[in-house]
Length: 175
Image 1: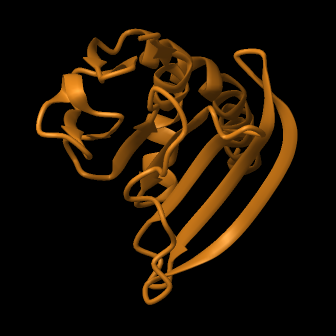
Image 2: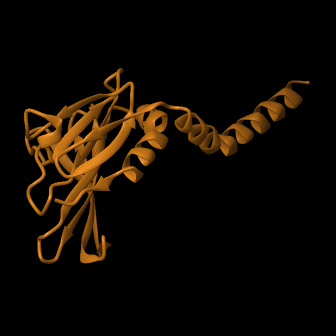
């Protein structure tokens, strides 16, 4: 009987693992979103998050913003200026962080050739991880960054689907 219960528990665990991405996507679809309009971009983020412009007093004047979860375990990041520029608030802080990974490859964004870079920064005390994807055009005319900062693997799992929706919702606006 004990062997049967263990087998049943194992089977249920496997089924849960198989279904968890679908459940995560379904729960993300049910999350209410708000629209943030920066100077040259729009993005949708979970309504329960708090939006904050990073480089201007008003959202409509900003090219960068963060969106923080109510439990402070996740923060989304966006930088999308009219042209190129330096993304505020994402540089490595050597005293407290290490670069855990970096990968770059050529590609196109909005039909413009440039380099995509994926960067992972980790706190030395293991209190958080920051992950960014950026695109910089070869002629420096376009530079955007999207990213997240999370406090644990559980937070990453909890907000992963909402982050994917946030990232996919980016609309870059013209003059």
